[in-house]
Amino acid sequence: MTAKAPEDTLKDILKEQYLGVLATERDGRPYTNLIAFAATEDLKNILFVTPRFTRKYSNIQISHYASIMMDNRSNTVLDFKDATVVNAMGVVKEVEKVPEYSELYLSKQPHLKDFLQAPTSALMMMEVEKYIIASSFQNVVEMEMK
Image 1 (cartoon, rainbow, N blue to C red):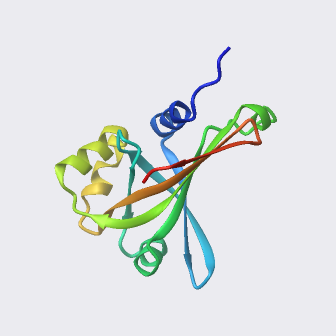
Image 2 (image 1 turned 180 degrees about the vertical axis):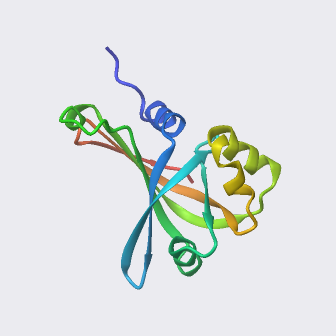
């Protein structure tokens, strides 16, 4: 059996997984949140939504650098050999809720339409600089996106 190319593995994770963990920081202290995300076809951007009154939103306003971890764990011992973890690192900014971005987000997360459309919610976009893909517990591949 031939191993998948890292880009194919990355595409699978970004397509199949609905949730990720966003990591931001303030004053040198990390902060994580569960987010629902969608990625662009070219893998260069990841969209998510957050209310503007949240700690993650204010952290992003102070430091635009963040990371998002997505994985396909089953929470069993098999994960040590079967799970794949993707870490996306880049710059996050608020973007307009234009149809292109809104439709992309809702194509994956249709149940969050009201959340996206709420006037207090911000549509955020990470411009991915690098992905780190870890599989089989210790196989690590880095993909630069610039």
